[in-house]
Structure formats: structure tokens, C-alpha cells
Image 1 (cartoon, rainbow, N blue to C red):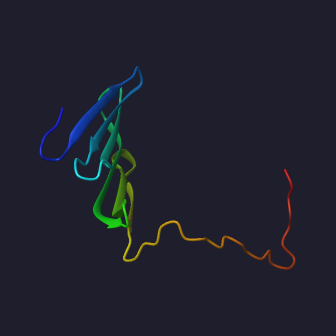
Image 2: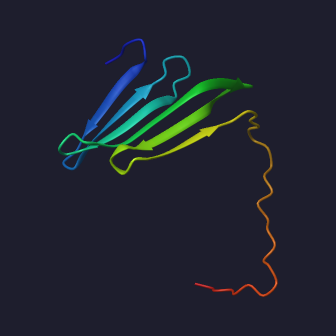
Length: 101
């Protein structure tokens, strides 16, 4: 279905139901929710403040909430670069224990 928020998709399974809201302008998932078999929301996420970098729509705000655990994380970006090289190197401190698995 659809409304002013966007396109709504519901996927029902034996153990949980997932609901997605797709932003009609950018075709991005703007809201996502997971509920257990009893209908209790276990996870709620939303993305917003979308900006276009070239032709790539990117949300500048992401919030994930775990209502039952009363936990959440929010990430808000002031500046975003896409498709840029990332240096993920790090130096192992002297004296650190190494474990190879």
C-alpha cells in the first residue's frame, strides 16, 4: 500500500513481521520495524534528512531503537563523502597479544 509517507511493505513470517516504508522520492527504506509473533515491536529504525551526492541519495540521519530493552542509537552526519578511498589501517600496539584463529 502507499500513503504520503511512501510505499508500505509488510512481510509476515511464523516468528516475526517486518514492515518497510519506502521513500517515494528516493526509493530508500525510510522506516523499518520488526515485531515478534505477539505483535511486540522488537526493533524500529528510521532514516531521514536525505541529501543527494551526485546521483546517490544518502540519509544524513539514522536512528535504531530497541523498545523492549530501552536502548537506541542515533547517527547524524554533518558531512558525507561517497565512493572515496578509506584508510582502515591501524598499528598493533607493542606488547599486544596476538591470536590467530
